[in-house]
Length: 436
Image (cartoon, rainbow, N blue to C red):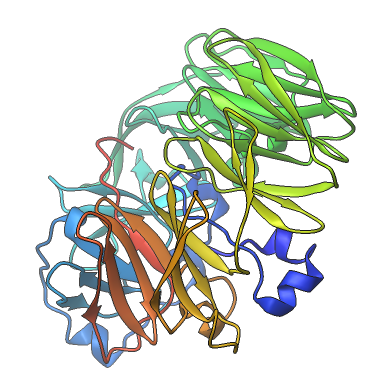
């Protein structure tokens, strides 16, 4: 993943190759993505030759663009797998093993695809499509608009229907496109914007109350378990909201909140203006320390899996910051992107022409480094946004030279899995969902 916001702020490092961005596995709501309704189904030779049924275990496969491959065996299972996307990466948000379905999101709506790559009909209620809707991340439920009111039901993806639907509100003023904007469903509350004003809808009582929350910032500041949110409220202050209790606590910072980075389910880094970085611990209910850099901090990124390290950028350099102690270690070479292989090791790519630093490296927090390949990842070959590196359970997958490579941290092996296919440098793992 590229660290583009910081890259723009480091002209000296940009010439050398840019800054890192790490792959993290936080859930992002599917309303942020473009989906199949904006694509005309592609009838290519590759899709016509595709088998009628594809059997696989999601833990064994990776999507390279829209090519489905088994990264353990090196087998190409399908090219242009999901119809309507061609070679582009579909925004898959859920995978259901029992029914052999994947769910693709599109700004408040979702549609199911079978493992054969064929799309099912959109969800309908009472014979009519439900349109843009809100889907819960905690339970298999959906909220949609019908005749100006909100309704709640259970999606049946196999039969493209909504079952057990009941009306929640009795106001008659909800627009059909209300869920194409920003919304947040947590617990039994649904936060959305009505005429530009944030509102909270009780999904049990049907009541609607105004809330003084910057909804967009609240959504962007969600914790990994979606139970908390950290966000700026005004210059010199940030807040942490706990949705289960409705409690919002405010804390001082310097200037405007520039960035929020969750380290664990309870700890978050808050970047203020100038040189301040605050670490808030929700279990303790307080800011555990404030870090003052010698020069202005421009960004923070990519916490290690255990949340003990993060990347900190200043105008002069990029550092590894140890959260518990505040100790920082300069990154020893300019790098473009990377992923954590363990809690203290970062796999990184550098694409500069200088053969002394070009390639793929392993950087450890003690300052040691090892080059495992002379060739970088293929991020520069992608049109637009690319994700050439992705973390998996036993290590990291990456695309280099159009081929799929697998670094396994236990064995410390770096091997080529698939070659000669010119795979797209956009990787996605199919995370299994129990409910959606």
